[in-house]
Length: 334
Image 1: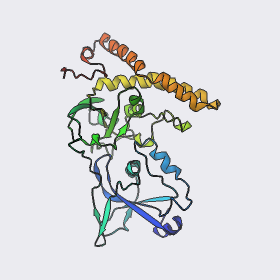
Image 2: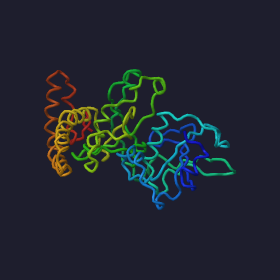
Image 3: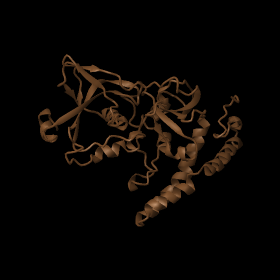
Image 4: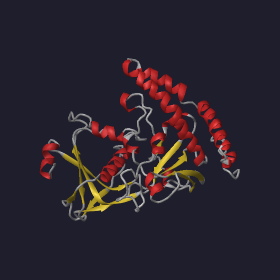
């Protein structure tokens, strides 16, 4: 177990730190401070890349900082005037750390604190609002509810949501979906705060959201073993909001059909290629070709037509009124 006295030895005698007090992804204060320690000159002292950090931040939508060498995270639970009162870290704290690392670029972002009169002054440098002059008009998105909200809060799997122009999902730090982007349906994903009814004492799978797992599958051909896996940063996300990055309306039916296509067509086709390329040297080339052949707008449109017809045939008449995702018309025609 690391101790404060070990920091100088751990970091070659020169220590820098960042203090994290807020999860900007979830838009909430932590209620305590996570203290992060690392070598002051890790970029120039020969330190090797921290593979653990690289793994948990893979899938981030921004180019994250090149963290190198050992790092130590500690949870301070005391008041601002007492920076040496620590508590045990939990998996929830790990989520906050990963979210912070996924947004930190090393270019002045996420500077969370300043010192004044020997005390920590919390400062909000992660304003989640957007410039009203560049904000899109009001549109429609979809809330995808996690298992906790579905089973305990009794919410449906998905619901349509009206999105105001200044909603934090318009911020560039929200996640994007590679598969949807390739077929001309650019999406952004933003996490809701967990419901207090199940956040701490709910079942172990309360945060699970299978739909998010499908939407965020990695298509990174440069990392052989990560292909078609959900990045760590987007596992067990809880409930999320999904919108079109181009500002056009998105309906729950659009996402239902998209997830069906990804799970039953895209994943199986690409997984077969991944299984075959384990014994070939040109696996990157094979995956590039497979992506061009499998993840195509025309392929999804074919499945969309069949999916809608099957729904109507089963008596779900509401699907007769649902527009093609590329037509982007709401049910009332607006």
